[in-house]
Amino acid sequence: MKTIDSNEVQEILNDFVEKDVYIHLETTNGAYASHLDENAYNVGAYIRNAQVSFNQAKIIKDDKIYRVGLKLEMGWIYAEGLTDWELTEKKELLLAGHDRNGRLMVALEISEVPFQY
Image (cartoon, rainbow, N blue to C red; front, side, top):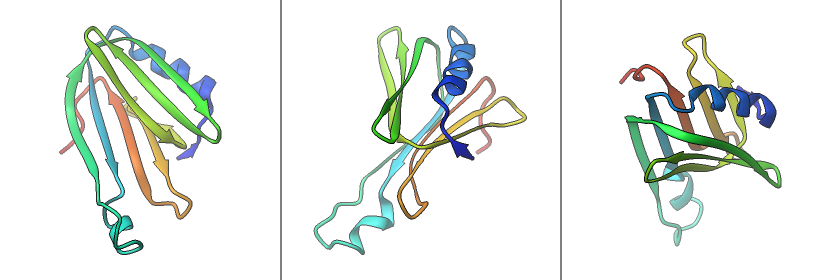
């Protein structure tokens, strides 16, 4: 993966607008939290191969991290804390947010075909 370039990512996001796409979205602090701070809560969310169509997509930089929002007919999908990206040979857009130690904290992936599971 490489550091996000918002112009490149925005162009790819635009290619997915008004198409039926599959979304993978996950967040976690998982095992990273409780062993470092006994008062920390482990939290996470995971969804894979949710089929959606969005009519608008935006990437916005906030300090050194990025947020991507996908506007649906009746709501939004967004991921915050993104730092890295890549476009696979299968045309899957992979966006990830890693902490200072390189551990995954958030992932948003978009594809026109279902992700392997």
